[in-house]
Length: 390
Image (cartoon, rainbow, N blue to C red; front, side, top):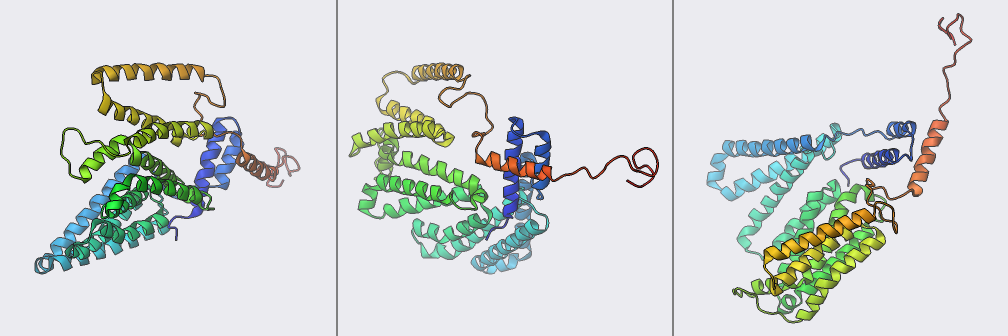
């Protein structure tokens, strides 16, 4: 089911870790070179700038191709626009997938920009086919999203694309929200429904990280984790709930009306950032820590929006001064390791663990097998075998 070879991802991970350990002095240069030789990167992945250029070029090529096909079959489109668009989109989607699979197999491209562009164009083509067919039925939005979801799921399972992963999560959120709004009880309990959904999605992502092929989906699962934690906070944030309630009920006033259970949402608005920060510090998890700081800032904004007693510019000046002062103090204190934390850059180094030991043993074993096969002396003439014999 996977388009890319698992060995590509594994080798890339090993080389990255080995380079990190080499820079930290945990591996010698000889060991680092041996790892690169033993786990080669036999795929094409250019630098980010070339990747962006290839992605844009691929998208433009797809647009020009579709435009050319449209001009060729213009008469068919005039007679039956719906049928013509369906055939064109379906044919282009199938061709894009065929070309994508061929390039991955023959040219060994991996997240090169070309494969990303072809994947997105193929998905757009297939979604267009579904939309054209469903549009006359006037189905609710959640049902239309449900029909197009399988294309994104298949694309994610096979290609593990980060953007596709984000779209899947947003589609799930929109399906759940739109479906809940069709019922009075769902509209009333929407914040709690979203909170439970976010927590369930986070638990599901953590379970997926235990899979043997976790590295194949590592980046996208990290994005999923971030989105679940962000949606968990936003679903019960007082500002989001109050303003969202006014929008749902189409109440147009300068200030949104008060909501029920306001103290509970105030409690969540204050509690969740604290929980994220504590968990981030305890587990040394940057995702939790970063989101904790961001949500704390949004919680402060929420309070200021409804209960501001000083001008905004003065509040920003005070907050900026406090943040700079606090950051400077923490940086100064963490120049030396304290409680397992340090300001020194670590390049995602998480300490000398069992992976380091195993990899070092592997490299030492490989290096230990290399004997000096070329020995001087014993030749037919002087000069260590200059006569052709050793």
